[in-house]
Image 1 (cartoon, rainbow, N blue to C red):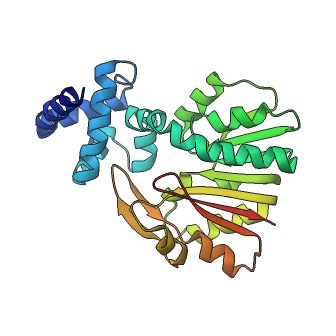
Image 2 (cartoon, rainbow, N blue to C red):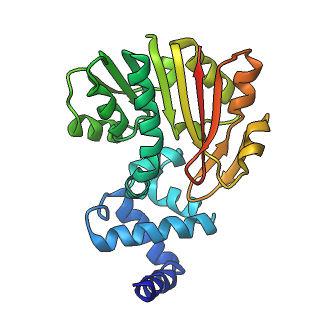
Length: 263
């Protein structure tokens, strides 16, 4: 099995060194032609790895996608979809953490920022004491898919930025989306989350290879390029400087950090 895996890696390594082949995969990924075939999923997995090592591929992808918003184009494509499904085991760690906390604290209303395909929202809306779950994302295509997948009566999906939200919620969750807030927007984003959350906030973001204790101490976003372009954010320092006392900060999984605030 190990020998077969190495052979597959070598096979795709040779193919991916060819720009024409890479662009054909990018086009197929944008058109959702790869996610449902075994070959397509293998190709996407290796393409993600290749993009992590060769950042010039970001501009190649953008050219094919015809978009000026890299993150939106990536997550709407099969690249983002397959990456999400491959990482769902890790996401279960913090989904379970958040859901247990919602249960234990008897929280009734939930806002999930950057909800993606709606998995966490659906699980949360199934809790008997939860009256409303709103999942928001900037991608119309992803929100459309989430609406098709999950139809609980207390579950809603909308295309929104967080600064457009006028309601208040017992808890605001942000899983991964925090990685993609630009440095000049991060403080206003966090201020907005603080203002609309009445009781709790749970955020999870990637450490992107940065040491967990270092991430706790940073005061400015650090850009790290992988298959995507994102930031390790100064979450702990921001909330600590706000004078919030009940802040729980821990490493979760192999390369993620979780911050949990009780107001």
